[in-house]
Length: 533
Image (tube, rainbow, N blue to C red; front, side, top):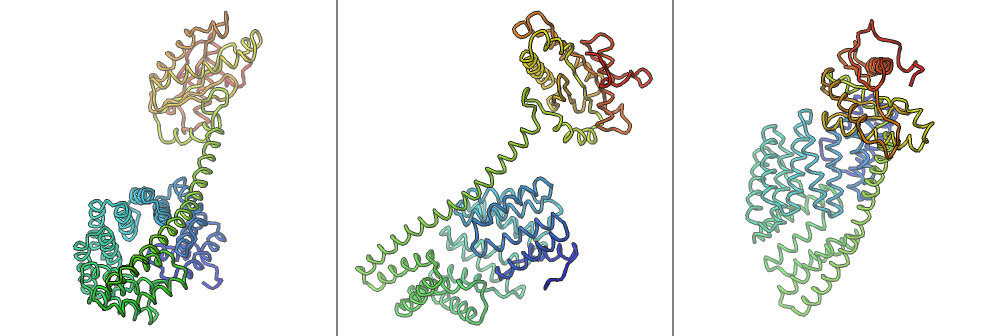
């Protein structure tokens, strides 16, 4: 891109290329993603910014920065969920699954992998459909659920073949063989490897060195040591020719080569391969592989009949393994802490948001909630009815008794409104508009049914035993009802205005009653302009 300003379509296309193919050079991919994120920000396109940011975090994770980007990935996932971007949310869950895998939490990895697949819809590309199913199969295999994993691998294989996604199918078979190998089912692993090789030959695909390494591992596990040796020598030759995804690839090839040569009884060359692997591990700081080197060294000593040296190396192996586990637990703790802090912050923000939409005295929804939610409810439900309820002579209660008593009345009326509405219209809600005024929303409820329900609620309030709160003063409510069907065009302001005028009519006609469906010719002035209580 070289500093050139791209349009939205060009940025989107560049991001799609990163999203739908494996970027071998993670460091270069990170730089590209950073530039695309800057381009998207310059365009002011938040959706493109989030896509680019997710690509950037993906590359960052592959370069080893797990804890540093965990918060960002979870924030992207939350943004996508709030904005209804299912594809971005699915990809974010996929990235969360990768972070959990690297953090050692197989259960959380499976949870995110499953969420990613559940979010897929008809707008997802075939590549995305297959890739997320592969990830789910991998996650299942990682928990030891190989039967379930095999089922998902087969499903993904059918999709890949149908869509002619040959390279993706090759990746699928490689992962499948790897997890069969890890589970100890070497026969099944060999069967999958055979299918992968056959597929590659049919489609003219060349297996890359990491995939060939899986082949070599399976060959060695099945006692095919000569074949494994040749496979690993091929991997090393191609690595030396510059065909590698990561500098660290060579250590894995050397370790598997040492195992193959030990199996062949070629202990001298096995030791040479193992020494080269050990030196490379020390140079690159690859403690995890170095632990495996100690284990292989113990096995090699034993194969030569030097059991004293084998026992000594075994003790080194055990100590190194425990040290590595301690380091892994620390790394996992850091990643989990980052995720916890992100989740905790999100939950706290949600709590604050919920508090801001609740009336602190009654616990009911407030006017802010109504303004946020009611317009969409009205637009999507032509059968919706709503009502405004007002406590009669509430000023008298405050003046003759106390404001504390008035608060108790408000709380009790709110509770009776909620109980009555929930029993008749479970999908409805009650909100406090302010003062002694309440809104009741009744989805999919015709006006006549709404009036009947609300009259029952009115009677329940008037018939409640108020003695302990107000002593001799009665508590009643007047209610004005409106139906969305009465409003043309339907809107929040029109529906509230109709309910408001009907409430005024209820007050004007003597209070403690429900009024619904007045014709416009008979409507008095708006209740909010009145000077009556």
